[in-house]
Amino acid sequence: MTVLPIMIELAEKKVIVVGGGRIAKRKLNALLDSGAVLTVISPSVTPEIKQWAEEGKIQWKPKNFDPKEAEEAFMMIIATDDPVVNAAAREAAPPHCLINASTDAESGNIHFPAHFKRGKLSIAVSTNGASPMLAKKIKQDLQTQFDESYEHYLEFLFEARQLLKQTQLSKSRKEEYLRSFLAESFMQEETQQETLHELQLLATEKKDSE
Image (cartoon, rainbow, N blue to C red; front, side):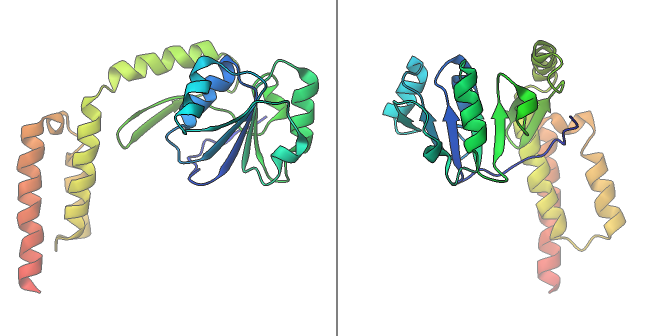
């Protein structure tokens, strides 16, 4: 199966998780900050899932899966160890529903890559199911390479880009600035602040000339 890596907005989308064990907990943990409407359907759940329900972060329905629960689901995560329940959940999924089947990846149409964030920077690794352990190892290596300093660096890049848009510089000159920001020196906070001050002056010049 050929898969295409994409970023997706889940705010206010209905996401159903069938199962309440370790795998369900891991998938939920990745979705808690997504803004999705998360519902777990399982007679029992891990202590973490129960706590999230008590905190109002998710809804937990302590019962067996009912096909009616899948109505209008934007995404379904099927994560039980019961093949019969898993098959019933896949069959109940609405047309065009995104399905992640933990025990049988080929029966779903989306995968959850190993990923992490550094502010506005998102990095994901997938082996297309060949070796989740390798994906996890690569993720750990990348977490060391792209440490917490990148969170501030991305904020600088974002602010600098917005300021550049406000200047009267030519397109080629703006591109020169953007390329220069990729230099190692711009990882330093002092360099970032000096650059932002320079760009603020350039942006102010444009406003004064209008």
